[in-house]
Image 1: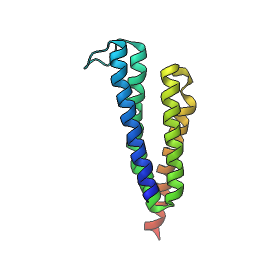
Image 2: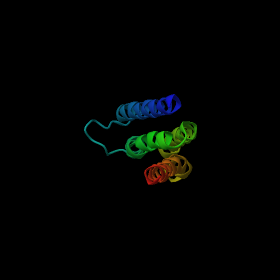
Image 3: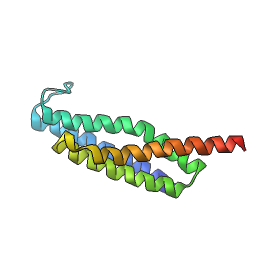
Length: 128
């Protein structure tokens, strides 16, 4: 489980990094808080941060449940794919939102896979 916790903490550090980048983009593009629009380039940074937050809501419980009911190493490996996907999503979305697909899939597919795995494994546990 230590691997899984390390991956989750790295995901939170990554989210913190994305938040810092949003703050830096505010200054660079002149978007004063509390505004979240007004400059398309700033909005790209902001959307990456918000989309990552939305993804974390599914990712964190899914990785822990998969590790608990299944195999922590498989869960951690899926978590690594998620982290790589989020970084690719960040870089591609900021550059050109149309190029975000690979990064999005590399973060969505592991999360969805872990949700389904945890659901199946937990049902198998209580069904005997």
